[in-house]
Length: 353
Image (tube, rainbow, N blue to C red; front, side):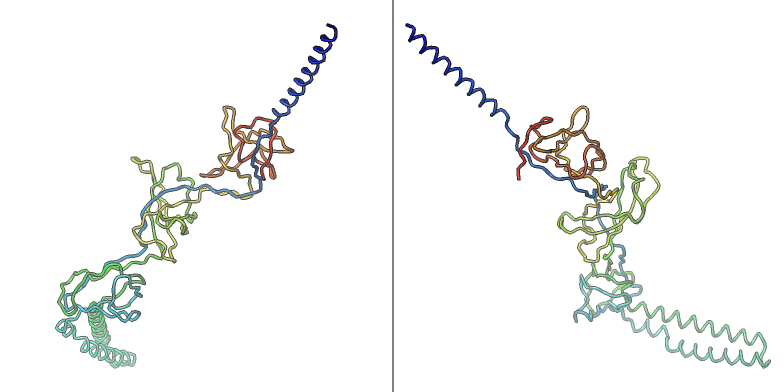
C-alpha cells in the first residue's frame, strides 16, 4: 500500500513539473514581435498647390478678310512648294493670298502719283532755295510746300490701297482655318480668307474662391498637365490677378500664361493647373497614411532598439500625399510606415528588411 502511495506521489510531481514547463513555454510564445517596416527621416521639401481646371486659348489670333473685291489667288508656300494649307507656319508679312483687280489697280494711278511726288519735291526744294536768297515770296514757298505734302499723301494712300491686294500674315503663327476658294474666281470685300494663331504662349482664364486671393502673386509658378498627356508637365505663371471679388460667386478672376514652346498643348485643350502656393525646404515630411488620428491629437510610431514608441506630432504644410511635421519627430528617427495599425506604445517589433 505504501509503495502504491509513493508511486502516485512521484507521478503527481512529474505532472506538476510538466505543467510548469508548458506554462513557461506559453509565456515565451506570448512575447511575439510585431513585424514592421520603417523609414529613416531625412530632410525634404514640400509644396502646396492650388488646383484648378480650364480651357487654354492662344495668345494671338486673327481672322484675315479681304479688304476689297477681286480675283482670288492662293499663294505657294516656299517651305513646302505647295499652296498654303492648314497647319502651315507663316512669318509676319508673308503673302498668303493675292486679290487681283486690274481696273482697281489702274485707278490708283500709282506711277503717275509717284512722278508727281518727285516733281513737287523738286519744286519745293527749288522754291526753298530761292526763298533763302530772297528770290520768291513766303506765299510762293508755302504753295510749293502744300503741293509737295498733298502729292506725298496721295502717293502713300495709293500704296496703302495697293497693299490691300496682298493679304499678309500679321504675325508669326500657324494657319488654323483657310476656307476654300477656287483660284481665279472673284470674291467680295469682307470675305474670310484665313485664320492664323500663335500658340507657343497660351493663356487660361480661371476663377478661384476668394480665400485664395492673398495666396496669389504675379509670376507665381504653375504646373500644367493635360488629361491626354498626363506625363508631360508644362510650366506657366500667373500673369494677371483681379483685385475684385464677384459678389454672386465669391470668386475672383485671374489669367495664367503658359510656356508652350514644345507645342505640347493646343488651343482649346482642357487642362489641369497646379499653382504653387507655398514651399518649404529641408523640413520633416512623412507619408500622410502613417498618421493615426486620435481624440487628443495625431500620433505616429518610431522604432529604437526593437521597441516601438508612440510620438504625438503637430503637423504643418500638406499636399495630397505627404505632410510636414513641425514637432514630435526629429531627423534620422525611424518612422514605422507599415504594421503600425496593431502597435501599442512600447510594443516589441521586428523590422523587416
